[in-house]
Image 1 (cartoon, rainbow, N blue to C red):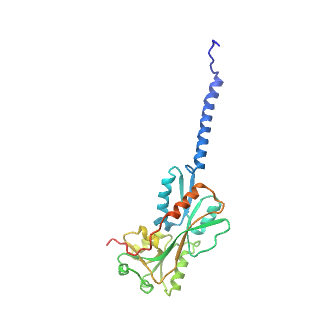
Image 2: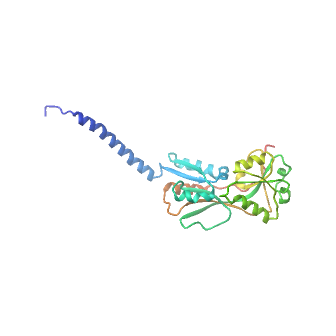
Image 3: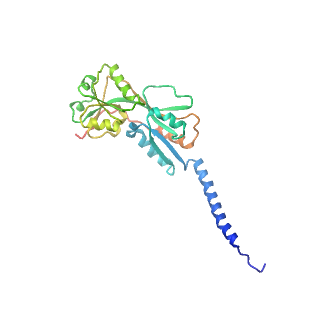
Length: 257
């Protein structure tokens, strides 16, 4: 008609909010597509602290390149506590260290990442640190620094059992709550610790890592997921982890000298 149409006050109120809702709907649709394609979302990863020295940092860097917009939540958890966190949805992937091969529970899946041989962490200034390998009798000169001091973990007892089985009778010097503390006590010259060879990948200058030929045992590092997990981000992280190549056990010492 010859008369122009104009919005009433109610129409102005409705139009502004309608545009906002339509815009939010379009964003929600796009975000849903991005989540379905693995471009957005979040991924919870539980890990044992010793893996900060090896597989975890490299896996995170590689995953970030593939999924830069995905939020990663890293949660430190003992291997024994990761199944519960997987079941209640707190994490999607657990990176754990297992003493011996075992069948996973029916609702969980184990993906083996690598075998981690035991090595001795020795103070850099100790004469044993200059050796290419170290025997159990020589290690007996030093107190054993045990870790982790946690009733829920069997790792410390297993290490002592392995030493006893090999014929050693270690004298327990200190019990550290976690591996960082244990290596700090080693650096201070208070004894030696038995760690996975992968820890030497980011060795510190005041501690050296020396193979123990008399001990053939080690641990297995696993990625643990729910059996019914079908998320694209979990699949991508598992693929990233399995493609990473772990270095061979250290053949040279690491020290400042």
